[in-house]
Image (cartoon, rainbow, N blue to C red; front, side):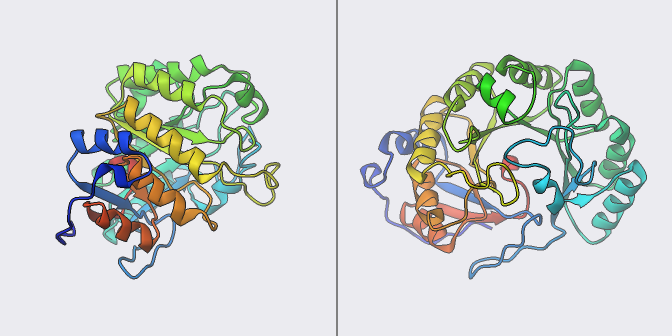
Length: 321
């Protein structure tokens, strides 16, 4: 439910990114969404989520053929494993009985950069019959895979887009090009799927390299939703010792994306450093004109209110804003 506290209108110049703020105000209502799906426990003075409100499932368990430098499969260990279609169907039925609303299907990639969802298409139909919203990380799919996802009833596809060939090779361990990622995005769109491309700020060992190109190309293709996240160096990975991109770098990229995509719903997702710069980054993101932020600090919510934005919490992925 939207907070209706009356707030005085805040001058655009009061924020860090007045041009991006003005673009936001010209194209969207004075509202902001804070996404808190159950994949991460969230409890603050303002809201608490349920673990089974909207869950993330890995169809490969912790296995991934790529072993990317920034992940090495560590991100998969926090997901609920469903290593067979039957297991996924049972999980979905149980979730629906408990009042859960949706599932994000993810998993490790194969050698071609695809999440192996093909065997799970029947189970996806079961999830839809249970009334669940189904999101899916697809990886580098073509038209045939995209069509199969649409026919199975997937509500939205999430696709990481990388704009630098050396990053694709050195970080993702793939012999692919930025054009391959854009081709997958185009295939998903051409099949009529709702697509939320994701761009990771600092994916190249903490360095911004290719993100502007990826965003520029995504803008040319045209999408209704766009998600930015930032590198979070994980213990036990080759990037554990990397320095994450600075808050001002990430926020400047976000503001740049807002000004070049004035009517696209722009979200900042859960993947980002949660250290001392968390609050500062999130305030910058509000100024940069995002429509949604995942897992905010209470001070971020209060700052959004001070800028004249009504807020709501939703227990689902930020790409569904």
